[in-house]
Length: 567
Ligand SMILES: *[C@@H]1O[C@H](CO)[C@@H](O)[C@H](O)[C@H]1NC(C)=O
Ligand SMILES: *[C@@H]1O[C@H](CO)[C@@H](O)[C@H](O)[C@H]1NC(C)=O
Ligand SMILES: *[C@@H]1O[C@H](CO)[C@@H](O)[C@H](O)[C@H]1NC(C)=O
Ligand SMILES: *[C@@H]1O[C@H](CO)[C@@H](O)[C@H](O)[C@H]1NC(C)=O
Ligand SMILES: *[C@@H]1O[C@H](CO)[C@@H](O)[C@H](O)[C@H]1NC(C)=O
Ligand SMILES: *[C@@H]1O[C@H](CO)[C@@H](O)[C@H](O)[C@H]1NC(C)=O
Ligand SMILES: *[C@@H]1O[C@H](CO)[C@@H](O)[C@H](O)[C@H]1NC(C)=O
Ligand SMILES: *[C@@H]1O[C@H](CO)[C@@H](O)[C@H](O)[C@H]1NC(C)=O
Ligand SMILES: *[C@@H]1O[C@H](CO)[C@@H](O)[C@H](O)[C@H]1NC(C)=O
Ligand SMILES: *[C@@H]1O[C@H](CO)[C@@H](O)[C@H](O)[C@H]1NC(C)=O
Ligand SMILES: *[C@@H]1O[C@H](CO)[C@@H](O)[C@H](O)[C@H]1NC(C)=O
Ligand SMILES: *[C@@H]1O[C@H](CO)[C@@H](O)[C@H](O)[C@H]1NC(C)=O
Ligand SMILES: [Cu+2]
Image (tube, rainbow, N blue to C red):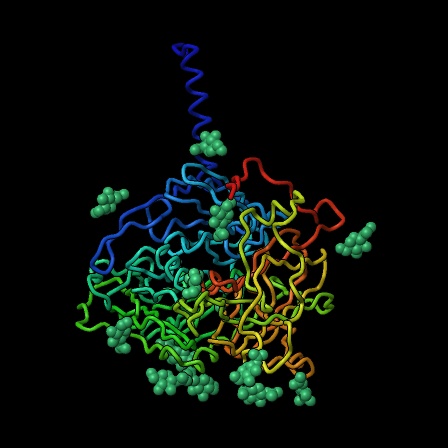
């Protein structure tokens, strides 16, 4: 040691510090570089916005209750934000992400560090861009393992695999939505569905890159399944293998063993699969479920469940029997089985004292088009609404305006009832064909027991709407077809083991009731997770006020929130 000079000691200390930083950064700090990257799919190459050059983007893995920091460096062409879908972010809407709701975009050439605070979530969630349609290519998995010293409420799987279902558009996604908004028509369908970024064997020019999941006979695997599609619900199955669904939206379920599942955009599921079939190749497949008037993309994306070991590769790989795309009975058969685990270790607490009740109609509408030159119904433009209010995104974020008392950005008069009560699911619908427009939010006092009854309507184009709320998970206590009936419908509620989720499908021409305690102060976006519906205004914002203790008040903003451009 005698040979060490002063400089050597300094270097040694510096490198130790470097090693320590590296160790910490292995789990708690992430760098996301947003950049344009060329990808070849469906026989052609195009540039897409990615995180760190991959599609889907990197997986974040944490243990329950941890906090991580993600520095997003925007080296792309336009402003973008990132949302941590299903992460409640207690008192911390500053890092929630929806553009102009909780922050202004991270401009090209700048960066912003998100502090992502995990609390009660355990299972699978995901992150995605929350600016226009950029989430089509900017998304990835969030894996939340049990906290140290705890384990799964089932035998630990041999291994886990994230399965991200996505949409691939041959043209630029921003062009797809911008041209649809300009003409007033429906945006084009995607050109393929994907599993882990790959369309799979049934699409042209895709076979060489089909995703393979390798398994050992006799072992059980956990699929962490994410529906990251833009506009399509999906049926998903594996040939000759049952799926055992044990979790949804990062909360545990009573196990459901089923040949297929239906999953809406925004939902995540934890699924156990036992490799119990003769070693071979089996297709994993996903295709549209749709009860809409406009037909969905009719392709099927595939991956291959490939057993390890020696066997002759089959000449034809079996495909699972997915229900046909309009089989609502098959979709309902699955969703009607979903129940919370509701065990001692994973209890649920459904609010029974409801102090704020909101009855909210969901509709596709028309916006008058000057001189009837638009390409939507009646030569008008398509719009969409909640309680007949079509949401208009402001140009200063609502959180900043609320926190800083800036007037004129939003109005606190989102109605707790639709403007008219009539037969919402009946034939005559023109009473609310044309919505009103604005940035109207619903203010809820801290600690209220909240019930929201979503009512689907038959206006213009009824379909199933996957409604998503930021900042909370909530209990889905009931669903039904037709109009909600205040006398008879509540009698069907499940207050014993309703699933605790963040995205629910509101049945076509039907209703769904959710409950939660307003215990997270902040500004929280609520919207349909079919991206075209959200773009048309099927959105609103819930502001939960501060409680009366330090731990029930909004945290102060972090330094360096992205600035809003003057417009
Ligand atoms: C993507 O491909 C285009 C055309 O093939 C090329 O001009 C461009 O430089 C490529 N971009 C990147 C980031 O590689
Ligand atoms: C992030 O942006 C800040 C300015 O907001 C700048 O000072 C900093 O150098 C940037 N960091 C990186 C790693 O780009
Ligand atoms: C799938 O589950 C059903 C019902 O539990 C059972 O009858 C069937 O044998 C299972 N199939 C496989 C391949 O495990
Ligand atoms: C699927 O849609 C494409 C065009 O979008 C059409 O050409 C094709 O015939 C359709 N296939 C089936 C089986 O309906
Ligand atoms: C589903 O579509 C087929 C045609 O593709 C049609 O015959 C059938 O009636 C449809 N079913 C429902 C429930 O709409
Ligand atoms: C749905 O469930 C019902 C009753 O259990 C059954 O009769 C029907 O065949 C199922 N349909 C599908 C498509 O799974
Ligand atoms: C609508 O038509 C009138 C009369 O032809 C014309 O003066 C006006 O500019 C048109 N407006 C738009 C928005 O095209
Ligand atoms: C958000 O506001 C900025 C101005 O600060 C504006 O350029 C942008 O278009 C807005 N985004 C949305 C989705 O409205
Ligand atoms: C509402 O309309 C539907 C569809 O036409 C009809 O079946 C139902 O009976 C109507 N309900 C009431 C209360 O009129
Ligand atoms: C709705 O349409 C019917 C039939 O076209 C018409 O008689 C009625 O006046 C319309 N109602 C409203 C509110 O526009
Ligand atoms: C604080 O708020 C809680 C409900 O969130 C209420 O029960 C309690 O009475 C309040 N305490 C005071 C001192 O206002
Ligand atoms: C609700 O159902 C009850 C019992 O069937 C019925 O008497 C009542 O008219 C219904 N209410 C509405 C608004 O349809
Ligand atoms: Cu919708």
